Length: 403
Image (cartoon, rainbow, N blue to C red; front, top):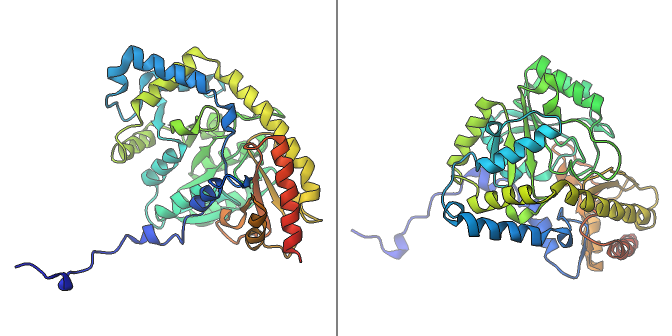
């Protein structure tokens, strides 16, 4: 017996976690970047004219000419050995002794973050995050069913006393941190704070998820050690890395370094997610690393980014309302600004976008009480001349909103 069309039964509803997020802030940001007339300080996009397109293309050509059957075939979930060894070598050279078996290749570091969340979080578990925090991390943790609690921060990063108090009171599964050139603030956690965070994690029983997508993009100051390299944190830190900001985001290549039990759990989750990261991309990246000096390329990119940061900082006093403050990052991609009391950057953006310029309002980056007077500006995507024009438009937009 068949049902008539009028008698059909509705399909079951979507899962609550898929409809309870109230929209996609990341998707909204990316939609703004697609408008060519907008000078866009909103996205976190690296400068495409600085990609080593020919070097990457040559790596793909070599891989497909010399080992096409392997490059086009399925691979192991953990990743191609050549790339894992190359990544281990780069970490070892930076003070974190590593072997290929310590590394899981991921489809961008965003997948690594998702794998860790799925491997560690049970619905209702507490996760500690910086305040403010990387927006897409908040989405991942919320999707996993976590209770997200912000930790107080200042210009030097996480406040250790506040962290320890929360760990004792909330009994969280892990702390998520971007200690170097943080997204969205651009700040860097000091060496002393890193050691304190490691000691608290060891003393109180806590995982640390250390995300480092921007650390190589330094154009001022001295490099600081990963938390993962500190003895107190060696058995409890997940280090996430990515080629998106230093090679090309379209490759979707990241990695995860973690203690063996957690790494194995993440590999199991990944197997059920995508089986493995594309083989040809992995082999091409390994070939690129073998044939090219990635560090020299990154140094050139960072130098350009430093010039663009300077152009942004030079124009902010005129572009932002009087009494505004902002960060001065030593690397990375972002400046974080706070407008005087009474300003709402989300409301202001509706007017500002009419002048063909955009930024990201700061409120969505907060897990707790939002600061509506904040905003994030990405300084790497445009040239200094484009940045100057964008700031002129921003000044006009704020002036128009004030009348």
